[in-house]
Length: 130
Image 1 (tube, rainbow, N blue to C red):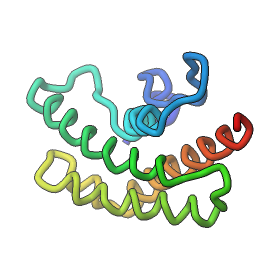
Image 2 (image 1 turned 90 degrees about the vertical axis):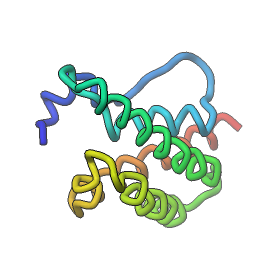
Image 3 (image 1 turned 90 degrees about the horizontal axis):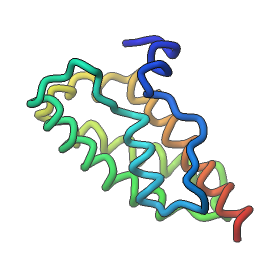
């Protein structure tokens, strides 16, 4: 596991990214998946391809989660949505080089926290822009 400072220098931590306007559920899903799993500079071509397949599955699950969250969603509903989405991640990682990591309780909890915070931000921004 790399530290937050190293991750930030590697571009793995994004607090605010803008390209003007509000973003679709799919855009939020893509950015969130990029926050959750990113390739290091020395990744092999085969692992990079496997990462792309895994990230595609994560984006599908996350898109559904972001579509289900509304500006009126409670924090409990958002937390439940994040939990349900991240529970599916371990299944997505089965057979990948990262199966063990995705099954690790601490890593799963960290991923769930990122998803929950992004879902809450998405709902909050939606509420302020409606």
